[in-house]
Length: 380
Image 1 (cartoon, rainbow, N blue to C red):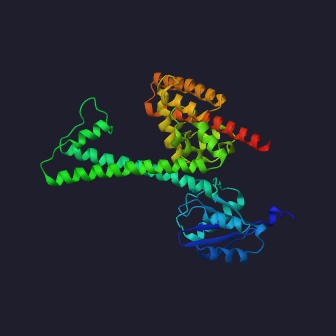
Image 2 (cartoon, helix red, strand yellow):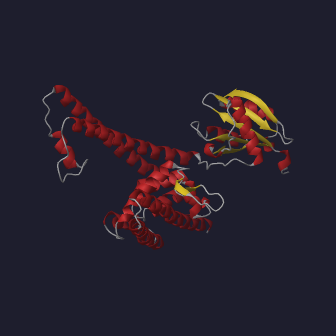
Image 3 (spheres, rainbow, N blue to C red):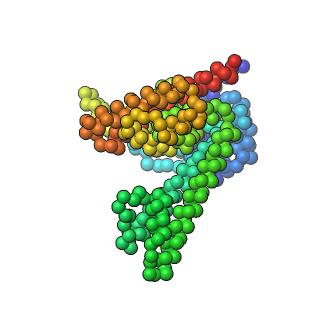
């Protein structure tokens, strides 16, 4: 028999690495402080056993560094659980006292009143692939920092990049290796910089090979969406893998506008009465997706063209002509958008962000079509 919503008890959990503060919002209105328990599976099991019928309990906790382990454990114990977006929890301007017990009670109260916004929780396999993709992203960031340190070291000692030479190409690296220093200490420093760059390059190559293997072992639907997104200009395998692992099924968004808002690429707004004031983008939601989308959007400053790496990629992946048609339409529309905003005097970063916002819409269209076809094929 289904449990009436009037009999549901709402449990707020303030989760930390070692402890969990627990509070219950009873159906009658009372907020009960249950206490603080160790953040260990056996302690959580004992807590659930004390609370009574599992189908009468709904739990929530904030997304954070502890991940989704507690979510999976509560789900296995038949407790309905949601992970809450921390930045969207209502706050009172006058609140000046913050404790774990108060936070747990606040979560329980707001959860009962429906004022909390849950986040999407991936399954364990999806999260494992996302961790691998993020590890590669961290390696790329390490390489950037290593290059910055080397560049500043050369600048301090009066070495400037030769004209008509692109930095960080093989020719540039050969030029650095040819530099001569009189001091042993400086020669040793340069050698260490070069070894570090070689190390991080090998690390990135190794991680990219592992990502290829992991994608090949992923469910067919994930593979097809990653391949389909690569029909777009500026969206190679790593960008497509980042979007899919961070967002999951793009069709879970009812419209492209919802996806744009989720990724924080829509303008902020502060309007009152007849005054309408829009500002910079909100930058809410997933920063990993926002970064790769903006990077890909720079490609649309160039005229529409199908050839080179993009043409080879579309042929190699044997993509559906319908997806290629969407990607071709995206090239025309986004380039036109870039030119139009540039002619209006918008600066390049603003223009590229606006192009990226629309690029997300084309990604949503491609992913939705691939997922619909996959669903129909599975049902046949």
